[in-house]
Amino acid sequence: MRRIAIAVAASSMVLSLAGCGVLNATGGSGDASPTKGNDVTVGLLLPETANTRYGKFDHPIIKDKVAELTRKQGKVEYANADADAAKQAGQMQQMIDDHVDVILLDAVDAHAIAGQVKKAKDAGIPVIAYDRLAEGPIDAYISFDNELVGEVQGRTLLEGLGANVDSSDKIVMMNGSPTDPNAKQFKAGALSELNGKVKIAAKFDTKDWKPENAEANMTQAINSIGKDNIAGVYSANDGMAGGIIKALKAAGVTTLPPITGQDAELDAVQRIVSGEQYMSVYKSYPDEAQAAAEMAVAKVQGKDIQFDALTRDKVDSPTTKGIPAQLVQVSALTKSTIKDTVVADGIYKVSDICTAKYQAACDALGLK
Image (cartoon, rainbow, N blue to C red):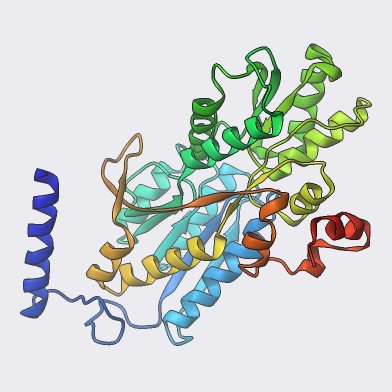
Protein backbone atom coordinates (compact mmCIF):
# COMPACT_ATOMS: atom_id res chain seq x y z
CA MET A 1 0.00 0.00 0.00
CA ARG A 2 2.83 2.37 0.85
CA ARG A 3 4.41 1.85 -2.55
CA ILE A 4 1.12 2.65 -4.29
CA ALA A 5 0.66 5.80 -2.22
CA ILE A 6 4.14 7.01 -3.09
CA ALA A 7 3.52 6.34 -6.77
CA VAL A 8 0.29 8.32 -6.69
CA ALA A 9 1.94 11.19 -4.89
CA ALA A 10 4.82 11.20 -7.36
CA SER A 11 2.41 11.20 -10.29
CA SER A 12 0.51 14.12 -8.81
CA MET A 13 3.74 16.06 -8.37
CA VAL A 14 4.82 15.38 -11.97
CA LEU A 15 1.46 16.53 -13.27
CA SER A 16 1.52 19.72 -11.22
CA LEU A 17 5.07 20.51 -12.36
CA ALA A 18 4.13 19.87 -15.97
CA GLY A 19 1.13 22.17 -15.57
CA CYS A 20 3.49 24.92 -14.41
CA GLY A 21 5.75 24.40 -17.42
CA VAL A 22 8.65 23.09 -15.33
CA LEU A 23 8.97 19.79 -17.18
CA ASN A 24 9.75 19.57 -20.88
CA ALA A 25 7.23 16.76 -21.31
CA THR A 26 3.60 15.99 -21.87
CA GLY A 27 1.55 12.90 -22.56
CA GLY A 28 0.84 13.97 -26.14
CA SER A 29 3.06 14.20 -29.19
CA GLY A 30 2.17 17.64 -30.45
CA ASP A 31 2.42 19.94 -27.46
CA ALA A 32 5.69 18.89 -25.83
CA SER A 33 8.84 20.95 -25.64
CA PRO A 34 11.12 18.08 -26.64
CA THR A 35 14.83 17.89 -26.01
CA LYS A 36 15.09 16.53 -29.55
CA GLY A 37 12.93 17.27 -32.60
CA ASN A 38 11.67 14.80 -35.16
CA ASP A 39 15.16 14.29 -36.65
CA VAL A 40 15.65 11.31 -34.33
CA THR A 41 18.18 8.56 -35.07
CA VAL A 42 17.39 5.24 -33.40
CA GLY A 43 20.15 2.64 -33.32
CA LEU A 44 18.73 -0.88 -33.57
CA LEU A 45 20.99 -3.79 -32.65
CA LEU A 46 19.48 -7.25 -33.22
CA PRO A 47 21.23 -10.46 -32.21
CA GLU A 48 21.02 -13.08 -34.94
CA THR A 49 19.48 -14.29 -38.18
CA ALA A 50 18.74 -17.93 -37.32
CA ASN A 51 15.40 -16.76 -35.98
CA THR A 52 13.58 -15.24 -38.94
CA ARG A 53 11.44 -12.92 -36.83
CA TYR A 54 14.15 -10.24 -36.59
CA GLY A 55 14.38 -9.59 -40.31
CA LYS A 56 10.72 -10.20 -41.11
CA PHE A 57 9.07 -8.38 -38.23
CA ASP A 58 11.14 -6.50 -35.65
CA HIS A 59 13.32 -4.38 -37.94
CA PRO A 60 10.70 -3.30 -40.49
CA ILE A 61 8.02 -2.65 -37.85
CA ILE A 62 10.36 -0.50 -35.74
CA LYS A 63 11.56 1.36 -38.84
CA ASP A 64 8.00 2.12 -39.96
CA LYS A 65 6.85 3.15 -36.49
CA VAL A 66 9.78 5.55 -35.98
CA ALA A 67 8.97 7.14 -39.34
CA GLU A 68 5.31 7.47 -38.35
CA LEU A 69 6.11 9.02 -34.97
CA THR A 70 8.53 11.55 -36.44
CA ARG A 71 6.61 12.59 -39.56
CA LYS A 72 9.12 10.62 -41.63
CA GLN A 73 12.02 12.73 -40.36
CA GLY A 74 13.42 10.09 -38.00
CA LYS A 75 15.50 7.10 -39.09
CA VAL A 76 16.73 3.75 -37.85
CA GLU A 77 20.36 2.62 -38.10
CA TYR A 78 20.22 -1.17 -38.10
CA ALA A 79 22.84 -3.84 -37.47
CA ASN A 80 22.54 -7.59 -36.89
CA ALA A 81 25.31 -9.43 -35.03
CA ASP A 82 24.77 -12.94 -36.48
CA ALA A 83 25.05 -14.41 -32.95
CA ASP A 84 28.55 -12.94 -32.50
CA ALA A 85 28.91 -11.03 -29.22
CA ALA A 86 32.20 -9.41 -30.25
CA LYS A 87 30.67 -8.28 -33.53
CA GLN A 88 27.74 -6.74 -31.67
CA ALA A 89 30.06 -4.87 -29.33
CA GLY A 90 31.75 -3.36 -32.39
CA GLN A 91 28.39 -2.46 -33.93
CA MET A 92 27.34 -0.73 -30.72
CA GLN A 93 30.63 1.16 -30.53
CA GLN A 94 30.04 2.38 -34.09
CA MET A 95 26.61 3.67 -33.08
CA ILE A 96 28.12 5.46 -30.10
CA ASP A 97 30.74 6.99 -32.40
CA ASP A 98 27.97 8.02 -34.82
CA HIS A 99 26.15 9.78 -31.97
CA VAL A 100 22.79 8.10 -32.48
CA ASP A 101 20.12 9.52 -30.18
CA VAL A 102 18.99 6.26 -28.55
CA ILE A 103 19.85 2.57 -28.87
CA LEU A 104 17.44 -0.37 -28.91
CA LEU A 105 19.63 -3.32 -27.90
CA ASP A 106 18.74 -7.00 -28.28
CA ALA A 107 21.89 -8.50 -26.80
CA VAL A 108 23.70 -11.59 -28.08
CA ASP A 109 25.36 -11.91 -24.68
CA ALA A 110 23.59 -9.94 -21.97
CA HIS A 111 26.60 -9.93 -19.65
CA ALA A 112 29.36 -9.26 -22.18
CA ILE A 113 27.63 -6.16 -23.59
CA ALA A 114 27.45 -4.38 -20.21
CA GLY A 115 30.64 -2.39 -20.87
CA GLN A 116 29.25 -1.00 -24.11
CA VAL A 117 26.02 -0.06 -22.36
CA LYS A 118 28.06 1.98 -19.89
CA LYS A 119 29.96 3.65 -22.73
CA ALA A 120 26.67 4.66 -24.32
CA LYS A 121 25.43 6.00 -20.99
CA ASP A 122 28.64 8.01 -20.53
CA ALA A 123 28.12 9.43 -24.03
CA GLY A 124 24.60 10.54 -23.11
CA ILE A 125 22.88 7.93 -25.27
CA PRO A 126 19.94 6.13 -23.61
CA VAL A 127 19.87 2.35 -24.07
CA ILE A 128 16.61 0.42 -24.08
CA ALA A 129 16.98 -3.35 -23.75
CA TYR A 130 14.79 -4.94 -26.41
CA ASP A 131 13.50 -8.50 -26.06
CA ARG A 132 16.48 -9.58 -23.90
CA LEU A 133 17.46 -7.94 -20.63
CA ALA A 134 21.03 -6.67 -21.08
CA GLU A 135 23.22 -5.87 -18.10
CA GLY A 136 24.67 -2.43 -17.40
CA PRO A 137 22.91 0.90 -16.80
CA ILE A 138 20.07 0.48 -19.28
CA ASP A 139 17.24 3.00 -19.20
CA ALA A 140 14.30 0.69 -19.90
CA TYR A 141 13.34 -2.80 -21.01
CA ILE A 142 10.63 -4.17 -23.27
CA SER A 143 9.99 -7.84 -23.86
CA PHE A 144 7.37 -10.50 -23.53
CA ASP A 145 6.55 -12.04 -20.17
CA ASN A 146 9.24 -14.69 -20.50
CA GLU A 147 8.33 -16.89 -17.54
CA LEU A 148 4.79 -16.95 -18.87
CA VAL A 149 6.18 -18.11 -22.23
CA GLY A 150 7.78 -21.11 -20.49
CA GLU A 151 4.63 -21.80 -18.49
CA VAL A 152 2.51 -21.80 -21.65
CA GLN A 153 4.99 -24.15 -23.35
CA GLY A 154 5.11 -26.54 -20.39
CA ARG A 155 1.37 -26.53 -19.81
CA THR A 156 0.57 -27.10 -23.50
CA LEU A 157 3.15 -29.90 -23.75
CA LEU A 158 1.41 -31.68 -20.88
CA GLU A 159 -1.90 -31.29 -22.71
CA GLY A 160 -0.27 -32.82 -25.79
CA LEU A 161 0.91 -35.80 -23.75
CA GLY A 162 -2.71 -36.58 -22.88
CA ALA A 163 -4.79 -37.24 -19.80
CA ASN A 164 -2.79 -40.33 -18.80
CA VAL A 165 0.57 -38.56 -18.54
CA ASP A 166 2.55 -39.51 -15.44
CA SER A 167 5.90 -38.87 -13.82
CA SER A 168 7.54 -41.84 -15.57
CA ASP A 169 6.99 -40.38 -19.05
CA LYS A 170 10.36 -39.26 -20.42
CA ILE A 171 10.82 -35.93 -22.15
CA VAL A 172 13.82 -34.12 -23.59
CA MET A 173 14.29 -30.46 -22.60
CA MET A 174 15.98 -28.35 -25.27
CA ASN A 175 16.62 -24.95 -23.71
CA GLY A 176 17.97 -21.86 -25.44
CA SER A 177 21.38 -20.25 -25.43
CA PRO A 178 23.10 -19.93 -22.03
CA THR A 179 24.15 -16.35 -22.95
CA ASP A 180 20.52 -15.27 -23.38
CA PRO A 181 18.85 -14.31 -20.08
CA ASN A 182 15.45 -14.99 -21.64
CA ALA A 183 16.37 -18.67 -22.01
CA LYS A 184 16.78 -18.96 -18.25
CA GLN A 185 13.33 -17.43 -17.72
CA PHE A 186 11.69 -19.69 -20.33
CA LYS A 187 13.27 -22.68 -18.59
CA ALA A 188 12.07 -21.58 -15.15
CA GLY A 189 8.53 -21.10 -16.40
CA ALA A 190 8.48 -24.47 -18.14
CA LEU A 191 9.89 -26.30 -15.12
CA SER A 192 7.19 -24.79 -12.91
CA GLU A 193 4.69 -26.74 -15.02
CA LEU A 194 6.69 -29.89 -15.79
CA ASN A 195 8.46 -30.73 -12.53
CA GLY A 196 6.93 -33.74 -10.84
CA LYS A 197 4.58 -34.46 -13.74
CA VAL A 198 7.06 -35.96 -16.21
CA LYS A 199 10.64 -37.25 -16.10
CA ILE A 200 13.17 -34.95 -17.76
CA ALA A 201 15.44 -37.65 -19.17
CA ALA A 202 17.83 -35.29 -20.95
CA LYS A 203 18.30 -31.53 -21.01
CA PHE A 204 20.52 -29.18 -22.99
CA ASP A 205 21.40 -25.49 -23.15
CA THR A 206 21.69 -24.95 -26.89
CA LYS A 207 24.56 -22.75 -28.07
CA ASP A 208 23.39 -19.70 -30.02
CA TRP A 209 19.86 -21.14 -30.40
CA LYS A 210 21.06 -22.78 -33.62
CA PRO A 211 18.86 -25.51 -35.13
CA GLU A 212 21.90 -27.59 -36.09
CA ASN A 213 23.07 -27.56 -32.46
CA ALA A 214 19.61 -28.64 -31.30
CA GLU A 215 19.67 -31.41 -33.92
CA ALA A 216 23.01 -32.67 -32.60
CA ASN A 217 21.76 -32.49 -29.01
CA MET A 218 18.61 -34.38 -29.92
CA THR A 219 20.61 -37.09 -31.67
CA GLN A 220 22.59 -37.51 -28.45
CA ALA A 221 19.37 -37.73 -26.44
CA ILE A 222 17.89 -40.33 -28.79
CA ASN A 223 21.02 -42.48 -28.52
CA SER A 224 20.90 -42.21 -24.74
CA ILE A 225 17.18 -42.66 -24.09
CA GLY A 226 16.04 -44.65 -27.11
CA LYS A 227 13.87 -43.29 -29.92
CA ASP A 228 10.76 -45.14 -28.72
CA ASN A 229 11.08 -43.95 -25.11
CA ILE A 230 10.68 -40.21 -25.71
CA ALA A 231 7.14 -39.11 -24.87
CA GLY A 232 7.63 -35.43 -25.71
CA VAL A 233 10.16 -32.68 -26.37
CA TYR A 234 10.29 -29.25 -24.81
CA SER A 235 11.90 -27.01 -27.42
CA ALA A 236 12.36 -23.39 -26.36
CA ASN A 237 11.83 -22.04 -29.89
CA ASP A 238 10.69 -22.97 -33.38
CA GLY A 239 14.09 -22.98 -35.05
CA MET A 240 15.34 -25.61 -32.63
CA ALA A 241 12.10 -27.57 -33.04
CA GLY A 242 12.95 -27.90 -36.73
CA GLY A 243 16.36 -29.37 -35.85
CA ILE A 244 14.78 -31.71 -33.30
CA ILE A 245 12.31 -33.03 -35.88
CA LYS A 246 15.18 -33.68 -38.32
CA ALA A 247 16.99 -35.74 -35.68
CA LEU A 248 13.88 -37.75 -34.83
CA LYS A 249 13.15 -38.49 -38.49
CA ALA A 250 16.78 -39.44 -39.11
CA ALA A 251 16.48 -41.92 -36.23
CA GLY A 252 13.48 -43.53 -37.93
CA VAL A 253 10.70 -42.06 -35.80
CA THR A 254 7.53 -41.99 -37.92
CA THR A 255 5.00 -40.84 -35.32
CA LEU A 256 6.50 -37.74 -33.77
CA PRO A 257 5.94 -36.97 -30.08
CA PRO A 258 4.48 -33.60 -29.04
CA ILE A 259 7.12 -30.90 -29.61
CA THR A 260 6.87 -27.30 -28.40
CA GLY A 261 8.24 -24.11 -29.91
CA GLN A 262 8.10 -20.35 -29.75
CA ASP A 263 7.95 -17.42 -32.19
CA ALA A 264 5.23 -18.63 -34.59
CA GLU A 265 7.64 -18.86 -37.51
CA LEU A 266 5.91 -19.73 -40.79
CA ASP A 267 7.69 -23.09 -41.06
CA ALA A 268 6.54 -23.90 -37.53
CA VAL A 269 2.94 -22.90 -38.24
CA GLN A 270 2.99 -25.23 -41.23
CA ARG A 271 4.47 -28.02 -39.09
CA ILE A 272 1.66 -27.47 -36.59
CA VAL A 273 -0.90 -27.71 -39.39
CA SER A 274 0.64 -31.00 -40.57
CA GLY A 275 1.01 -32.40 -37.03
CA GLU A 276 4.82 -32.52 -36.94
CA GLN A 277 5.04 -29.83 -34.23
CA TYR A 278 2.45 -29.65 -31.48
CA MET A 279 2.56 -25.96 -30.56
CA SER A 280 4.38 -22.67 -30.67
CA VAL A 281 4.05 -19.53 -28.58
CA TYR A 282 2.55 -16.60 -30.40
CA LYS A 283 4.05 -13.31 -29.40
CA SER A 284 2.66 -10.20 -31.02
CA TYR A 285 5.80 -8.76 -32.60
CA PRO A 286 3.90 -5.69 -33.82
CA ASP A 287 2.89 -4.88 -30.23
CA GLU A 288 6.46 -5.28 -28.93
CA ALA A 289 8.20 -3.53 -31.81
CA GLN A 290 5.78 -0.61 -32.01
CA ALA A 291 5.95 -0.03 -28.26
CA ALA A 292 9.76 -0.15 -28.40
CA ALA A 293 9.77 2.52 -31.10
CA GLU A 294 7.38 4.64 -29.05
CA MET A 295 9.61 4.29 -25.97
CA ALA A 296 12.74 5.21 -27.92
CA VAL A 297 11.23 8.32 -29.51
CA ALA A 298 9.54 9.46 -26.28
CA LYS A 299 12.81 9.04 -24.39
CA VAL A 300 14.88 11.27 -26.67
CA GLN A 301 12.12 13.81 -27.20
CA GLY A 302 11.76 14.33 -23.45
CA LYS A 303 8.16 13.13 -23.27
CA ASP A 304 8.51 11.79 -19.75
CA ILE A 305 4.84 11.18 -19.03
CA GLN A 306 4.41 9.24 -22.26
CA PHE A 307 7.57 7.25 -21.52
CA ASP A 308 6.42 6.46 -17.98
CA ALA A 309 3.04 5.29 -19.29
CA LEU A 310 4.84 2.85 -21.58
CA THR A 311 7.03 1.43 -18.77
CA ARG A 312 4.74 0.73 -15.83
CA ASP A 313 6.41 -2.57 -14.87
CA LYS A 314 9.72 -2.93 -13.04
CA VAL A 315 12.41 -5.59 -13.53
CA ASP A 316 15.86 -6.28 -12.08
CA SER A 317 19.01 -7.33 -13.93
CA PRO A 318 22.14 -8.65 -12.20
CA THR A 319 23.57 -5.10 -12.32
CA THR A 320 20.58 -2.77 -12.17
CA LYS A 321 17.45 -2.79 -10.01
CA GLY A 322 14.04 -1.31 -10.67
CA ILE A 323 14.40 -0.93 -14.44
CA PRO A 324 11.28 0.64 -16.02
CA ALA A 325 9.74 -2.04 -18.22
CA GLN A 326 6.87 -3.20 -20.35
CA LEU A 327 6.06 -6.93 -20.42
CA VAL A 328 3.86 -7.98 -23.33
CA GLN A 329 1.50 -10.95 -22.97
CA VAL A 330 1.67 -14.17 -25.03
CA SER A 331 -0.59 -17.06 -26.04
CA ALA A 332 -0.36 -20.69 -27.15
CA LEU A 333 -0.46 -21.37 -30.88
CA THR A 334 -1.94 -24.77 -31.74
CA LYS A 335 -3.99 -26.13 -34.62
CA SER A 336 -7.14 -24.69 -33.10
CA THR A 337 -5.81 -21.15 -32.59
CA ILE A 338 -4.01 -20.40 -35.87
CA LYS A 339 -6.94 -18.47 -37.32
CA ASP A 340 -7.43 -16.38 -34.17
CA THR A 341 -3.75 -15.44 -33.75
CA VAL A 342 -1.33 -15.15 -36.65
CA VAL A 343 -4.04 -14.90 -39.31
CA ALA A 344 -6.28 -12.51 -37.37
CA ASP A 345 -3.31 -10.24 -36.58
CA GLY A 346 -2.15 -10.19 -40.20
CA ILE A 347 1.16 -11.91 -39.51
CA TYR A 348 0.40 -14.47 -42.22
CA LYS A 349 -2.30 -14.92 -44.81
CA VAL A 350 -3.99 -18.29 -45.07
CA SER A 351 -2.41 -18.55 -48.53
CA ASP A 352 1.06 -18.18 -46.93
CA ILE A 353 0.38 -21.14 -44.65
CA CYS A 354 -1.72 -23.35 -46.90
CA THR A 355 0.64 -23.97 -49.79
CA ALA A 356 0.09 -27.03 -51.96
CA LYS A 357 2.02 -29.27 -49.58
CA TYR A 358 -0.24 -28.34 -46.67
CA GLN A 359 -3.55 -27.78 -48.46
CA ALA A 360 -5.15 -31.08 -47.41
CA ALA A 361 -4.17 -30.54 -43.78
CA CYS A 362 -5.51 -26.97 -43.91
CA ASP A 363 -8.79 -28.20 -45.40
CA ALA A 364 -9.12 -30.68 -42.55
CA LEU A 365 -8.70 -27.83 -40.06
CA GLY A 366 -11.15 -25.60 -41.90
CA LEU A 367 -8.36 -23.10 -42.50
CA LYS A 368 -9.56 -21.19 -45.54
